[in-house]
Length: 111
Length: 116
Image (cartoon, rainbow over all chains, first blue to last red):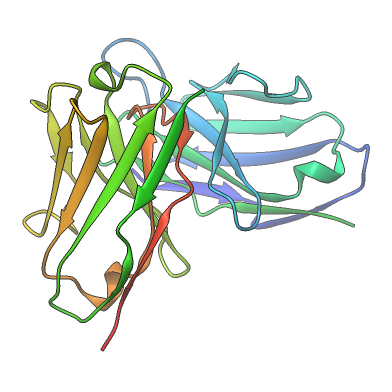
């Protein structure tokens, strides 16, 4: 399953919203009814951190300015008000069809 | 809290072997699917393998099938990746992670460089 993210780069203004798109080449509904579409954030020199799992569920400790949505083959990660610590690369990932696959990443930077 | 610490990376010549280890703590290791993922500048993030808590359920991505072997020792709370027949394209940072379909926690990674 190919995961396609857009944009590749996203310059944002502090305090403004941001949105990242992720499209899968096929549907992601698993046999248990869940949609294993996850979002990660990676800061330079660090390992990826899980933000959102199964489309819209924030992992523990993730600020509520992060939200996920989508269905079918189109998914979105939104940041309601960007803060300086949000810079880095965001990845979507599907855990429904083996081999699980990641998007190419969206680099978020402050204008 | 959940902690994962990878080790065993290094510089190896093409065709060589390495064994990566991942020491786990802070959770019931024997109950958890575990995963190996790698990241390289050229290929981005790539799933390699997962293994169930009992070790009975194992899968590999095609690019490493037949060359890499995942295993675990639940008595030692440790995950392993035996890598044989290494190629330059295997150069990457290798991460272990807890769970499979939702890799919730990742280690900091260990770097593998395959070069002559």
